[in-house]
Length: 125
Image (cartoon, rainbow, N blue to C red; front, side, top):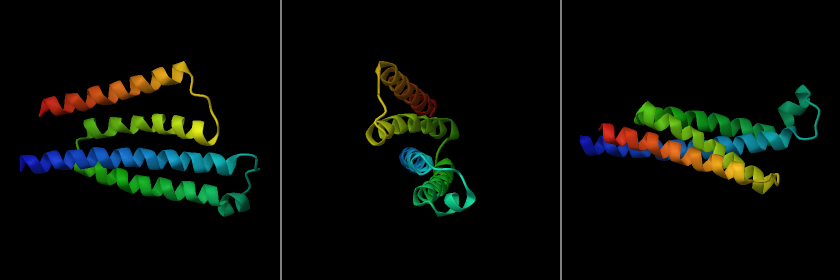
């Protein structure tokens, strides 16, 4: 039974990482859909970028529910902070945002924080 629990936690972490990537993509699609347009109801309901973003958010919500079901909340949920990393990278690629030294330092601290929380969950067991 102990091995099954370890596999569940590992799957939960993998799923939540996938969830953060999907929500980051959703944010990019929504940003793209909202750039340069006036927000009117017909536009909001017909723009493919916005619709894609909403669908991705819905998919991510389902995956997050699955991940939270499989894993320990205090270990799985902090992994959501990795979405800051994905958004920074995607914004640099798609919108040509600059990743300067402070952003790199922030990303490094996020990775360290997620790792420490994850290690704390492993040691508890």
